[in-house]
Length: 133
Image 1 (cartoon, helix red, strand yellow):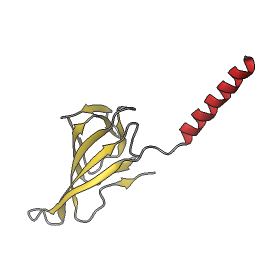
Image 2: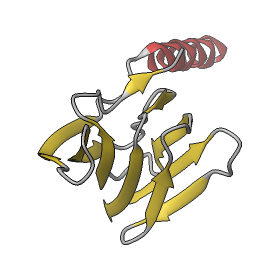
Image 3: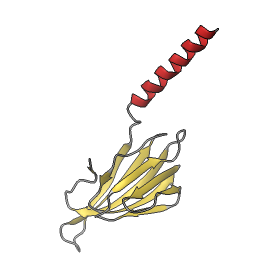
């Protein structure tokens, strides 16, 4: 019996280690539209949707843009450097400025997906996402 308990404990430790080393679930980003802003030369609006699978998250990054987030489904946790983390549910919003460092972006649930739309006002042709190491 002791041997079976020891084997079960070893198996659980092995499985925990494998899960800890597993790649995070893939975040899905879908471009919706991009439109130049003639009244603001050199600027454009880009709209995307982001889907976080259960347990999904973004690495620390910046947008170098005004980013307006609107949660469509589920619940997400957002935060920028120097600010408080906030948990948002469907119908709630979040804003990031062009100088903000996005330190927290994740699904609040480990079992349900989350989806949100992001409207970015940025320099024409600039990337929507820049990872920060």
